[in-house]
Image (tube, rainbow, N blue to C red; front, top):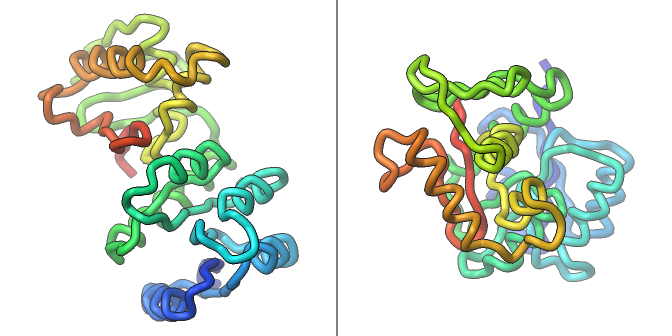
Length: 230
């Protein structure tokens, strides 16, 4: 079996070197790019299975790289960010990044996020809507049915819309703006207070302990993630 190819885009040679060693040790074939233009050229000429993209590139904003890739490709993109820069994380996710890992990053976390991103891309390409499970909660997208421990959970249209969007992007972080646009429409991207109320209501219906959520988790300053069984 051909090992999956990963394109590492970072202008710091030591970061590329460390990622190359780690990824090759875990069965990946690694290609590298030091600039945004070089990355775009490589993606166009020889698309990898996944891109790891640093946002602080010397020639262009990494968010712009993500936006331009998304104009014609849905290949998974994981961005590397600094911990405090929530605004840039949100911009990257809104432009189509699949997930983010903060520097300094945990290697096991990065590898786990990579596996999830690749699986999600394969699921989206092959099956589309299906059944998403998280703990004792089951979300049947085709039937528009949500159950917990086998019993149907009654949701309002807005609650279901939010849960559906999270389920369609299961295990990926979804920004506040993405959720609000998808359910409430354009012009509601700043209604984060209302979104928190809806999410709190969903957690009361789905979580064993809403104060310690395990199904719909919060990504501080960014959005939410539905943790699905893989």
